[in-house]
Length: 301
Image 1: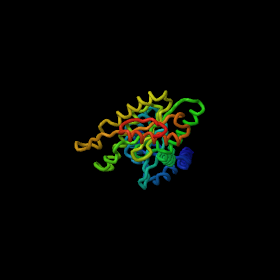
Image 2: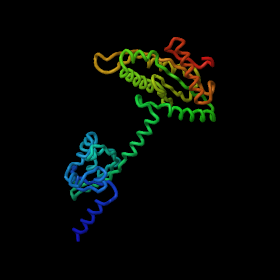
Image 3: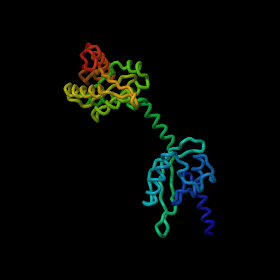
Image 4: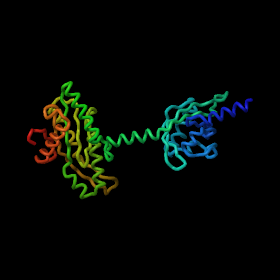
């Protein structure tokens, strides 16, 4: 009767419509569900007795062996651990794992029961959504996200009053960097400029890359031009600092500057596209005035 009961329990475990696996105190797989096997493309004989980390990518395997399994065996459980498992065909499966441990009478860990959720598709959709709204080179928000945030800000400040500003930045003589050192160096420069802009702006501000060497900044809740001039000076100084394009002693060092145009809501417009156009026109006025400076929209830029 006991043997029949254990057999039914094993069968129930195997047929449960969830990704399950159990490991012993040494991390070896002692039981696994059919969905686990089907999801990863293995047979039972392929996995039983092998260390669970054998079915993980290197980073997950290291985390499992060195951190998660020892801590969970000690504490009795682990929750919402992110791993990447390796399918038989070599592709990766993103999972979230939670587990509890069984102990013997001497309170030594015997085996775990882990439940895994396949979140591969969710991760793929999240990444797809991220790249739909962010620049692939710099990771900054792109034109799509910029437009969305401008729409919200115009609506908010239109109802509650207040001032915010748009800054349109174009690097000076960027083409020369590409021509002299190659497009790879130009990309490194753009990534460094993006990092410096993010590091200089206030927490509530936003910087976006439109493409090429054009960046747009949203300065939220500003008092007026004096505050913006102070911010602009910090941005100009950050951009102008020497930049090493690559690694090694032969990596070129360049210094570039930027021309920045500013348009204020509602003084220079209350619609997103009008503000962008006026900031762009002010930027070109900065270039005509000698570059490496900030100009505010004047109505005839």
